[in-house]
Image (cartoon, rainbow, N blue to C red):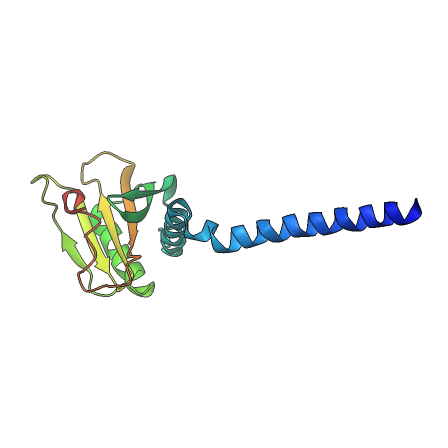
Length: 167
């Protein structure tokens, strides 16, 4: 009787270990390769890069979100501030450069002649931009957008995050 209980206990322990082993193998081999996981990972990388870009001290965060728009992982943060767009552009020109974004330039969108004031910066893996509401109302809203380039082949440039029609 005692040997039968001991053998049954060993069999139960081995079964639990086997099931846990199968679960660990599945999570390590299959789950990271699912499209949903890859999208979440790419969005979190874009969000991490966005959080490295520091807003001016008087800016108030309104909304922070991530998305996949037409295949590009994107993170955006909307702020309110009592400042004009020219001051914001000067601040973010320094901030983008300090955070490793070379080749910045001002940008006017293709969608309308009355496009908000914008900046666009890009490096090999990310593009970032500022869109400022150029109306006279206070507090002024502005958005910082970071787009991740998850492609292994980076021959063609990243899309401009300010141009909604290019993506």
